[in-house]
Amino acid sequence: MNRVFATIALLLAPVTQADTITTDGTLIENQIFYSQVSVKAHDVTIRNCEFYLPPDQTAGWYAVTNVYNDAEGNPRSTNFRLENCIVRGGTTGVYVQHATVIGCDVQETGKDGFKISTKGHCMIRNNYVARIGLTVGAHADALQMVGGSHVFIIGNHFDIPVSFADANGYLSNACIILQAHIAPLHDIYIWGNHFEGGSYTVYIKNKDHPTITTPNPYRIRMNANTFGYDYRYGLASIDTDPTIQINWNVMDDGVPLTGGPWPINTWDNWPQW
Image (cartoon, rainbow, N blue to C red; front, side, top):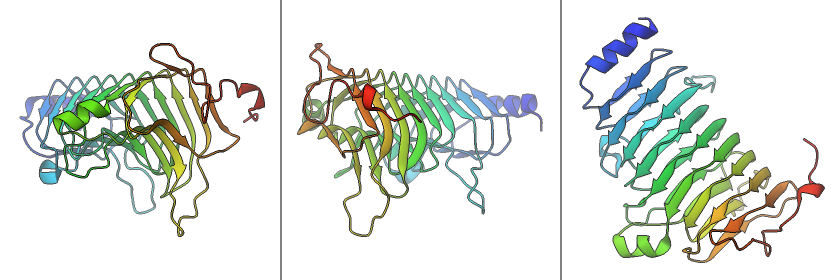
């Protein structure tokens, strides 16, 4: 089935149960899904769609995911694009690798808004995440990675203020958690976002466990972001590494972040890579 007919077939079909996409080049637009969409093909685009799931695994762990690998560990889906979609529910809203996610609104999840797999290679841009962590005891992060590399997190609004979460039955652990646990974590670019909430708003560390042998996160740039004041413990908890650059970040009222793990100017000391 070529791309045109694959697209027509999907557009005409009612979408009320779990769907698996296995045709390369599939385009889906303007559809409503009520259970997990699993992408197992290359060059797939899902655009202007809506996903409504309960905040648990009863209709699938994720609203949409392309994290599937073949027997040799190669991704079964690359160049996946999720554009201008509404996501409500799922244990996690969006779980991706080798993907671009732009302009999506993710809310009412059981745990996390976004997860990026250890294969990384993602662009997460101009998305909105709010009202997450409906599962009791959830480790609710707007975006979570436990390994991976080559990820751009640009222009997003991660809005999980602690006071709102505590008062309204949600949870708020971190806007971004980058924790080297399953695999090394490096080459992450965090630019021009607005973050509000979390026990620590940004958490970049190794997994503190005696059997974990991955290196500390490295080669991370976190520049020109703005932060709100509604967090629990602090703005950041970050392992020291000379290749982690933090610069030009300010509070949302313009106060520069100059102390602790937020030096105002580390650019000149950066290695060339």
